[in-house]
Amino acid sequence: MVMQIWGGRWVRSACLEASGTRGGIMMMWDSRIWKGEILEVGTYTLTCKFEAQLQNFSCHITGVYAPNNCIERRLVWEEIGSVRGLMEGPWAVCGDFHATRFISEKRNCVRSTRGMREFSDFIEYMNLVDLQLEDATFTWFKGDNQETASRIDRILISEEWDDSFSNLKQVHLQRLISDHVPIALQGGSWNKNKNYFKFENWWLGTKVACKLKALKTKLKEWSKSEHGNLGSQRKNLLRKMVELDAVLEDRMLTEEETVRKASMLMEYEELIKNEEISWRQRSISLWLKEGDRNMKFSHKMANAHKRYNNIDQLLVEGELTQDPLRLKKR
Image 1 (cartoon, rainbow, N blue to C red):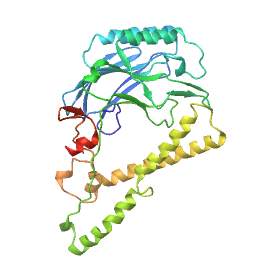
Image 2 (cartoon, rainbow, N blue to C red):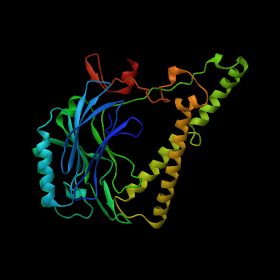
Image 3 (cartoon, rainbow, N blue to C red):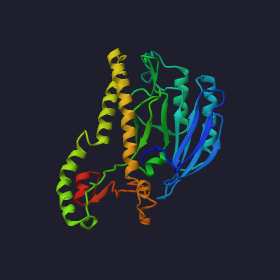
Image 4 (cartoon, helix red, strand yellow):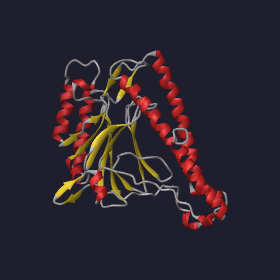
């Protein structure tokens, strides 16, 4: 489970423009996976109920955009508290709280403030779990050299999430343009099966089929190389960008590093465009434009509905195990 929603024609959304601020809240979800319903719209919060379309699971999510004012933020805590009484089961509160909890969550901070203590008291009073943010300290940066940094974005969850998901964790994603770092709530262990290449001889003549089979190995090797695999290129580029962002935890970027990061952002945008073109070519909509009339595939996009059978844990000889190697042997 990843609390991330990707765009597309199946996307549904709910919006709230926060009064008196420069920001707001937008929730987006894939209607093929989730059935969403707006439950409550407040001054600083937007609460929606979600029901899974493919399994028996439902949850509530409250999006928050808090003002940068300690007194006004108390109204936010009260608003969230009043919403809690409207629901049962798994609940997540996420967004920009404009508040930190600890000195370590704000660069160059030397003392704990009243706002920090009030935020921590609110989390404890609401029985919410503040998961540790893995491999990152800050979620917001300001200034050309980003000398100001803090962790004002987070996902808070109720204890009921542990009943449905294991290994819950809060992770950061790659920051591209915004001064905020995207964060995600992840849980469970998902291991994808190998995607084997299959070719039907009757598609083409026997001689052509034999030649294509001989070419198959070379094509697969090329597609897995960095030059032939757009996904691999994107991951390598993101890794380099993460390394530069890690430098910001300790110091400001040099002029050379700033130029290199800007260049990588441009390269990343180009890779995203190429990946989009690649998926369009593999989609059934393009097949139809080129003359394919097979109605069996007319409602599918390439790999869009592919799902993987997953066993998260297994009882082996009286011992509960999550070891992927032992699970595969069984």
